[in-house]
Length: 421
Image 1 (spheres, rainbow, N blue to C red):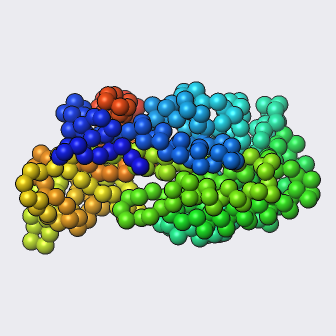
Image 2 (image 1 turned 180 degrees about the vertical axis):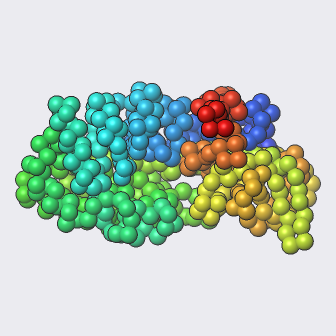
Image 3 (image 1 turned 90 degrees about the vertical axis):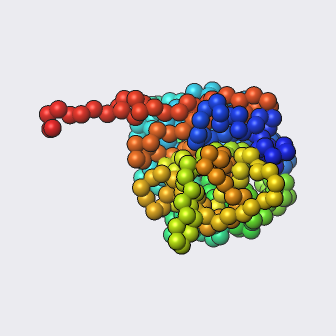
């Protein structure tokens, strides 16, 4: 469920007309429904209540500070993947014992800062990383919890760019290597081998791959427990899919109905979830304006003011996002088929291809749906385009949570080196 809906012919976010936000902040802009973020968080919390899990929202999906703070205030932890995301986590005041730190390439400086911040644990991706964390903990005269990320080699049937749990991927360690590390945990005196971590991919719409991976992990936990290594946590990651088009993903409750029974024999195990897209994906939209209509010999184009630098997913993944009018037209519906493209000088600059939709004219506002995950966070300044604002809605009010960048913002960290010109 999300809170973007029509009242008559007007698209609303909760109780705010999207058109009024556009009039106030200009286009393009991201618009987030705080109520939808929290709805999805609470649904997961309720569905997995029998396991009392630690739910750590995946910061990489949407790192807006207001969004993070709203979730943290309701008890959410955070899954982070960089020193920058750690800084965001600290800025919104999350309990550091609700932070889990992933990423295959954590730097020594990032690791030391995370240890100083007293995070719950690192998800460790390689033997060398384990050695670096152990040395950093020794340097800081402390002991640090870690979870070994296992690559369970399951196929999640999603886009190959967002598959992370098969043997061809860079993520995690094979079972044999992980087992050896647990057996030889004494070699790392400043680490507590506290958990197992998996994350098999993103936008997964069926439960079977999750079940396969979790069963493998539970068997692994049993095997290392026989050797005296008590595993405290199983982090089952994230990856639950959402509706972009015609997908039929599982609900939080349907997912929990399949997963919760797997832990009947492991009731002392603490469970961690890392949802990102499931909470944020349908909680946000990108609003853009039609600048030009171009009718060529072979096809038609709607040229809008949002571009691939604002939303990279269609160009990067071939991802589908529904695009709807902010204000529906009066009278009989007219449909047109066109590519919706942006101003950037790349053939890959499109939001949709061959899309049949309500006919739109210059000046019309369009809403690109399901942009709350991997939207603004993946945006860039390509073509020296300032990044767009992020606006949040709660009830009948809206607020600018991040203002539109200016050219001064872009030039602030740059200079002309006179010695070479």
